[in-house]
Length: 383
Image (cartoon, rainbow, N blue to C red; front, side):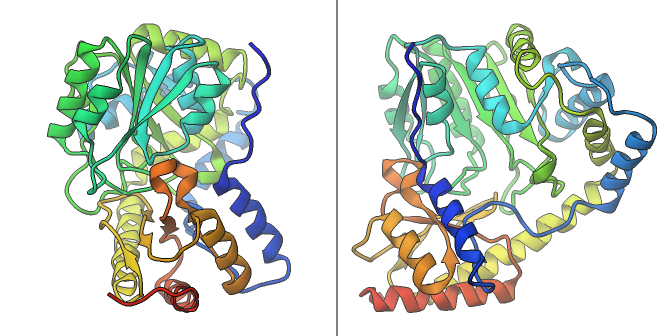
């Protein structure tokens, strides 16, 4: 297989441009990254410090510490109706879990389905020599089950779902997941379910794919500590997988990451067992920010959106004759506001931008003021 050149994703290009612009513009607002400004709760940091002081600075098992894997199983069984054993859990960063799960399930030339727009699945699929294939969502960002079924071919080996969605914030409903699972089962495909935002649902309740789909279906559930516990820089998450897939994922970790540092794992375990109140406060603050941002967007010219159920994002469509990358680059240069281009998440994202409500309401107000000025200057009209 020849070397893979992934090129430059437009979202990462904006991040680099924003970092450069921030050197000269101190009032730059960064709504392009899903990383709230909340500090990691003190108890989590103290748990990591205790582990460091106790000498937990050596290798850990590639699969993850048993105590942490047990805590993950207990939480997902009680909160999300996902039955598993600790042997089915692999501890690793959620983004890398996507790669490891794909490496454990597909061969070069195999096809992997995922939604358009959706999170960054194309790149890890291509790194493995597999073939990315997108299927469209409905206008409300729900699953288009007919389109999903039509996208399967004899080479399809896996389908990746995200709930709540990134960039859409759409929470997939139980009936959608059940039907998608039936389609995957009929085609003998594995389901990769990215549920990194499972704790950040504001309307309704999170439903895990593994709770909604048939138990005989191979389902890899991917979770993260980054979003629920304000631990984005700690780089830790997990996957819950069928035993054979979990075994293969452990092999991937052994020959790449080696392990997640044990002091990080001890902090994650403390978070699962003790930080639920902090997560609830974080969720309520983010709900307030979401509602505030939606109210401000309602007053802007040329903006339409589907209200998100969860995650950290709104994905509005704009009525300006610019590509989403042009829109984002000019908005950054002219108004000091960084947003993610919709096309970074797939062709169906063109004409949209992703806004992260990760800053306080006062900063969201400034961001919307700047966005409004930009829209009017570029010909957007109020509906």
